[in-house]
Length: 438
Image (cartoon, rainbow, N blue to C red; front, side, top):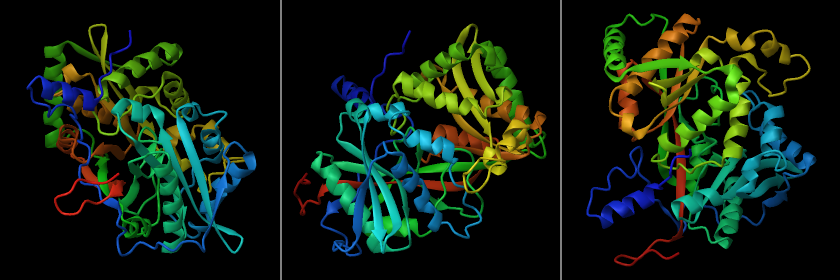
């Protein structure tokens, strides 16, 4: 049976009307309430962008998808830490005929051209599911890549925002690929190593291109580093292990890993947990089941069953945690897998990865704040160590999700990277004492 979904906004409204505390409506990350305004433009924004040729692409055309995927090559020449997205997967993700996300998306694809050369790209999109769930008029921008030229970047932003405003959009967040359910955030801290699986990378100067246009921070996404070369024998980890054992006995908990022979049934468990466990996170909007299953099928290719875990109380599944091997360190940096690189995966390349990323963790609301999150971290680290992993990432987590962030710190995780979701209110800043203008 599907879990009833109540949006955070509806929960907050219901609580206020009942005279109750609405602080739990966004349990893990509250929406930003101080986004900068589009108008008037900040002094650093370049408003005369007529000289930049902005063209529209059609992702339904293979040639346009190819052009879109090729554009970043010029940006990352000589960048040792950049790993291009796997082209065979990105081509599928960008194809409206293959990616079910497009059923709820309206997307505009822009390419900046100078002297016959593609020098920047951007998508702007409207997610019908997000706006229906939150009762907002929100747009997103993503897949941003650009040479270090403020005029080119600002031309892309202006063209994209004018399109969104023409659709009645009142605020925009990004970068996202395509929504916050997909890859998200601009890397703003720690450019000194390549991205892990399902993460993005970008030049340092991108932050200045966004800031100079007038974007401001909406939310930071934190990535934590954890080292397990010393195993689970540190003082903190031994303490957590003892606590975890007490919790298991007290709650009657068992932990099992995914059964790859019953994937349809297991995926259904994950989908139902996703609907319940993530619904009060900022930016959450429930994915349609078709899209959710489509995304899971891709992760199936790289998953190690022993690191995809379910928390059970009796016969009831109450939590889920998935850790993926960092396949990025086994793949070509240019994203072109064929003809030879495929053998790195076919002949055990995934299991040869020494680092992993704890990609997602969720618990049913009634089982939170009972120590189960720390228990899952402890279980994952122990199993990863037994499988030969030496460490890796946890994240991302919302910067104001104190419950999870404290649990990571208790397991000696250290803040390592920061991605930023930027935002812009597309209205006009009010004069002193006035209300904002749409």
